[in-house]
Amino acid sequence: MVAVCDENLIGQVLKEGKLRIEIKESFYKGAIVSIQEAIEEIKKATIANIIGNEVIKAAIRSKLIHESVVLYISGIAHAQIIKV
Image 1 (cartoon, helix red, strand yellow):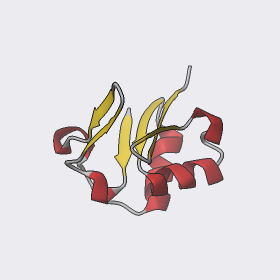
Image 2: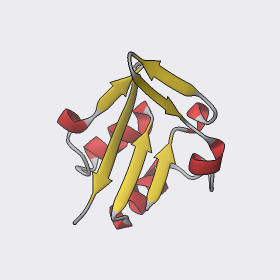
Image 3: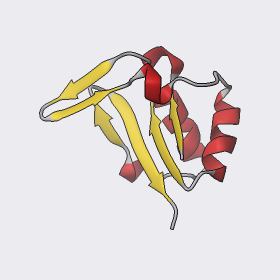
Image 4: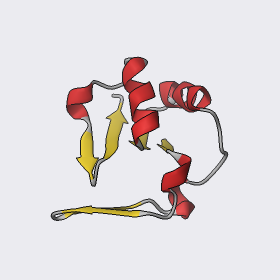
């Protein structure tokens, strides 16, 4: 499993209607890497939790996700990948 987010989102809480996502440092903060390094880690993962407009754009460009599966919460993109 890999959890990836745009660095500037660490510690934020996103709310929209009944949806609420807390971008906890304990879950998301690990090594700070480039977008391309993050994409390479996502490619290797069987489960990926991805949040942030920049990393989601890169995942779409890399054909790891389709834009139709992206959920927006307070204008911030979020998607999950599960490979079976």
